[in-house]
Each structure stands twice: as C-alpha cells, then as structure tokens.
Length: 372
Image (tube, rainbow, N blue to C red; front, side):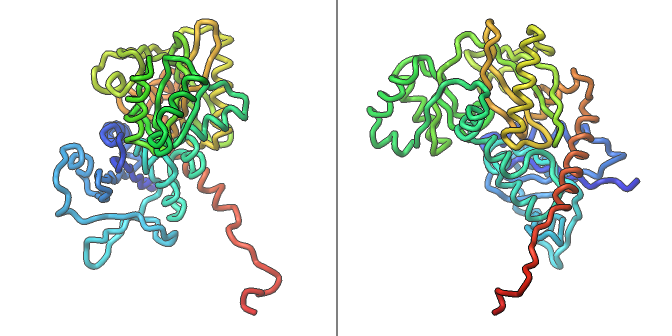
C-alpha cells in the first residue's frame, strides 16, 4: 500500500511552545515508518514555518532558521501541499493528513483548523468550532452549564474593565465567591497564568498575572478537597471513553511546574473510584465532548470529591502527547497502545474529511439573478 504523507505540525506562537515540541517528538518517534512518510513542520515562536528533516531539532535547540527555505500551507484547495516559498522555482510537498500538536494559542483555538479547512486537507482533532469553544473556558463553561454538566461556580470579566475599576470587580468577586479561588486566563493551557488566591491581595496579584495572557479573566470557586481525575475520549460520531486516571500533583494544584518541570507529580491509572462514579464521569465526558462539537480526540478533566460529587474542570482538544502525558497513557491502559492510537486518530481524520467532502458547498439558483 502507498504510504500516507503525514505532516506533524508543532511549535507555534504559544505559551505552550516547549510542551508542543516534546509532544511532537513522541509522535514522530512512535509513528510506523512502514505506513507513513513523516514530514516535521515546525513553527517558530515568531511564526516562521519550517519543514526540513531536522525541523524539530532546530526549534528545540533554538537555532537560527533564517537560512532555511520557508514552507507554508496555502489556503488553496487545489494545492493540498506544503509550498516552498523561498525557492525558485516554487516547489511543493503533497500532504495527506496534518497532525497538529500546537497546544494553546493559534493551534488549539480554531485558527489553524480554519487554515486546514480552506486548504481542504484532512487533519487530526476537533474542527474550527470545537477547537474554539473548547479552548475558551468561559464559553465552554456556559455551554456545559446549559447541558446540565456540573462545573465550578465562577465569574468572568474583561481585564481592561478590571483595571478601570478594580475595587468594584474585587467586591463583586468577594460577594459571589469564597476564598480560596482560582484565577485563570480562559484561553491558555498547561496551567499557564493560573493562580490560587487565598485572600484579596493574592486575588489582585493573580488577576494581574492572568491579564498578561488573556483579555478575559475567569475566577472560579475552589472545590474542597478534590481529586484530579482525567479521561481520554476518542472518535467522531460515536466517541469512546477510556478508563479514568488520577493526578496527584506535587504542588498545591496541578500547575505548569507540577506538570512538566519537577517530575514529582504522580499518575495513578486506573483511578480508584467506585464503579458508579466512574460510569457517571465517563458519561459526562462523552456528553461534554458532543456538546462542545469535538471530533478526533480530547482529554476531559474532572474534580471529584469524596462524596462522589464531581465538576468538569476543562476539556483539551489537543492534549499532551509527551511520554508522561495522560491522554495516550489512559488509552494504553484501556487496551489501545500508542502506535495504534496514532493510527486510529489518522483514520478518524480521513473519515471526517470524507464525510465533509460529501456535503454541498454551493447552490445553483433557478436563474442567474446576480448577472441581471
């Protein structure tokens, strides 16, 4: 059989740039080279595209890439390829499927997915809408509440409004929520910009930090003594859900350092939970996946109390794929090893693209009224 040409897209203008590089390295290593021709496509922190065999190494080492030709994916459905815009004459490399692993801004928020749609190239993961609403914790929270999926109590506002009348917004937060509370930039991942505030002074400082990363601020009531439970979801029209896993963070909460830096957080797979609780959170994960228009994959994170009461914390439409990431580890524990998981995700991308191709994108009127 002809090998599929898979473009692994990583890096990007994101606070999670470094995490993306590690995820990409794991995927590139695990893909079956007998089935796929793999093309590493890196995007620098400045937004420059690069597709050479050692793209990943160059970005990891923060080497200068200005001397290398620039490759771009053009929003032209006739091309369906990477185009070398630095060469003469122009050359191109056909791509069958894009596997994006750009976490966070410009990769997980629907922007790059819009480019894939315009280029008419199959791609792994959620589409424009699912990516956008999954990324924005304020919008996703509102949709989940409408679907009667439990979420933590919270308030949101524009950072620019907060800076104009800090006293008013602090007072409003303190009337509606109790300390401690979490302050989040709604459109970031990997806990970037998130703080836990125990009093007014910490709250103001946390909002100022979050305001460096987003124009919106989300403040949520802290759940008492929660267990951090994660599930992996896989599929398009008929999604499946993995066994649950538990994260025991090394810090007060599962922040960036606890996730990637200190190496002291512990993952327990499967999580030790009553069967009834597992069934409820698995059902809630599938429901959230469907409500938020997800396809391909997502990791759904819950906060579960001793009583069995749970709150959906967030959904990640491009979850981590590092060697310690929960998404692939949960599927491995559920009977789907890493290489088979990658095969399935690529197949889901092709299937969804084929479904979309069967939809009409034009309408033929009875008369050419626009010419009259």
